[in-house]
Image (cartoon, rainbow, N blue to C red; front, top):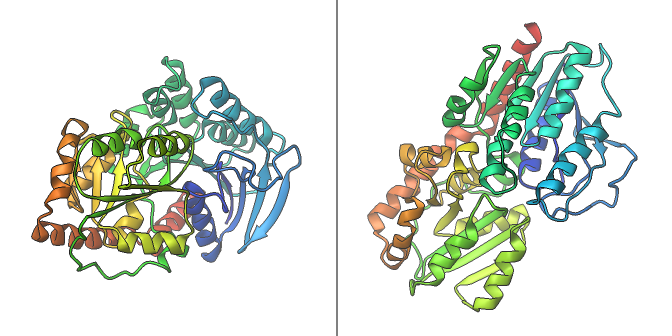
Length: 396
């Protein structure tokens, strides 16, 4: 089966880039002929990391996957509406230089968090008549509005119109399935296919659950992209105002990382250790040493995504300390499976009390729950589901 995958980020980009790459490699392992059209490497640093961002379309083959990289405008301030629109539009325009011909592929798959990618995929479908699978990792219009990037219903209307060009949808949490159902105009099927622990990180993580007690002071870890959706700086301010004992290691890159580093330097609070992202081996070590993996979400934005950083935490048996809306996908996951403490933002002021006195029996239960839930995000199980769904899509 010949598959064209359209996505903004791909290896060596981090965040979603690692996951999307692993999916394509996994499908190639299962006999698919996969071509990827993606951007030149830029994420999460928001800079041209390869020195190859430009007009030329560059091609390479990795692990049986053909990768075609297209240049785009990389914004200096990804949170500015004008720059964001130019970023999305430039990616779509760059991709449009290479539309597939009828007969080149058997199916199309596009990953959204970038509407520019979805717009290009819609144009491909209209030209070729091929079935199009939309994988919704995020609802970009709602996330942008909640993050203060833009206002107005036009973004949501554009997003939903582009979504409905696709013949089949999938997403990464039950809450997202429910949010997508009323947006359909052709009663498209919506599959719940979670993200997974990608192969390269899995090799470094110990599958056995932790049995150690929390350290004194407890060790906290945040590792991943940092923009406006995470609201990490606000959480740090709450912790800074307390005299609670903790050691908070923060590994981050992204549009919000500079402000956090500046704040940490200005406060001089030695409980915070702010640094850049690490490689996967170091991330696995940091997760094993951490007592809590911290995952905050800005209020009213968590309904649009499930943080990918949740899965490595569960796989390492590290309890998750979540600060988010209770009805968000993350909040629902925390409530249903109890891999750690959950705080809504009005309750975050009580966090220092938890860190000052952690119940060892409750902590052991969080460890066990995290390790038990990790099996749901097994790579082979999820990728087999992707492969079977793609074969069914081809037969429609």
